[in-house]
Image (tube, rainbow, N blue to C red):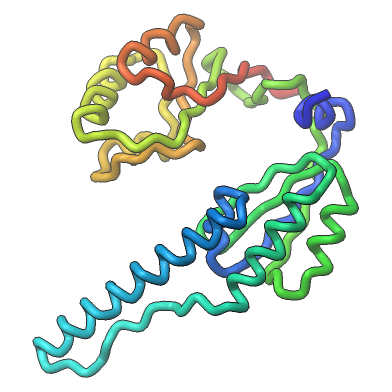
Length: 225
C-alpha cells in the first residue's frame, strides 16, 4: 500500500516544520548532491562578495556587503538530517524552502526523533485529519470540477509567451493567484503550487499541446460538507 493510501486509511498525518541553515540543499536527498551544492554556493557567495567589494571601493565606500558564511557545523547538520531520513524505514515526505523544511509522515516516532534534535530550530508541529476521499479537494462553493497542479519547470521566454497566450483565451477556468502573478512577472520558472481549476476533462490535453508535461497531478473538486 502506498504512502498516500495509508494516509487515507489511517486518516491522520503528522508533520514537523523547522529551521535549518541551507535547508534547500536537501532538495535532492543525497550526500554527494549536498556537498556539490554547498561547494557551488560557497563559490557563488565568494564571487558576490568580491564584486561588492570592488563596487564599493570604486565609490570610496568601505562598507562591503557581507554574505552568510556556510560553516562546517551547518554542513554536518545537513548531512546528519539527510542520514536520518535516508535510513528511515517509514514513509515520509520532505518539503524544503530556503532555510525551512517540513517532514510529513504517519509515523510519530520519526517526528519525535526529529523533535529531539536541538540544532533544528523554530519547530512547529501539526496533526491533520484526512476525512475526504483520496485525490479530492473540498471547497465550500466549488465552481469547477477539477484542479491540476503544475510541475516546477524552467521555461524559455518563448515557451512562457505561448503559455500566457493560451491562458489568456481561457474564459471558463480559475487560475491560482500565485500563477496569475507569475504570468505578469519577469520570472520563467513555474512552481509546483501553481494550479488551475476547470470543468472539462479534455482541458489538460489542450494545455499539453501548448506545454507538454506541465501538469504534475490532477484532483477532483468536491463540495465541502
